Length: 215
Image (cartoon, rainbow, N blue to C red; front, side):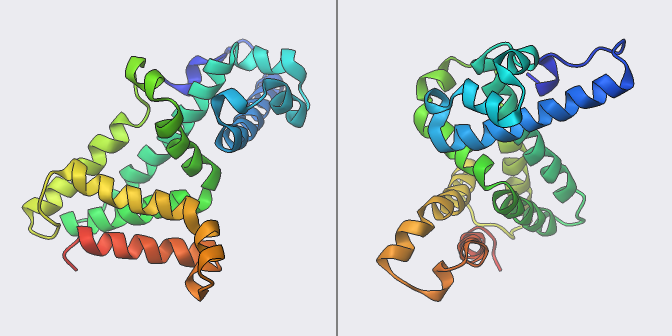
């Protein structure tokens, strides 16, 4: 299931029109990512997404024939970004360095794409039934890749023992929970570490990485 499946430009389309079509498609995905993250699948409005991008409903449906297709394309793009970052991390020389690089790449993802990170968490909470029925899961390759890096680090005795998926859950859970809870924590306890999103997330990620890696 790839994002390219949804109304990919034909090779017969003139280059200028193809370029404009790709730019419009990217704007739609950006706006959909933001609105799905804020309002969820059912709360986000296709009309609002189209209007914000200046294309109208017909223009949106030309690129994405349904709300489900648009949502799927947004999730796939998020997964593709995560997988690309994982590939970059895998270029490091040692198991420990690869896992450390993967954790840094994931943190960068959350910091650079906060709406996307929030959407992935919302997807897990809001769409349990859909996930159970889905034939393909966009995050499957990312999850498998992260588990492989954890297992390699465990074999090298530089990562905590236990099922890799448990270790991954502990790390991702800390970072993604930290991402969404900061505003509430700041109201409950005004501390310097909570006043800046990047400072806060780096501190949470460092604590989570310390429990995963034997550093």
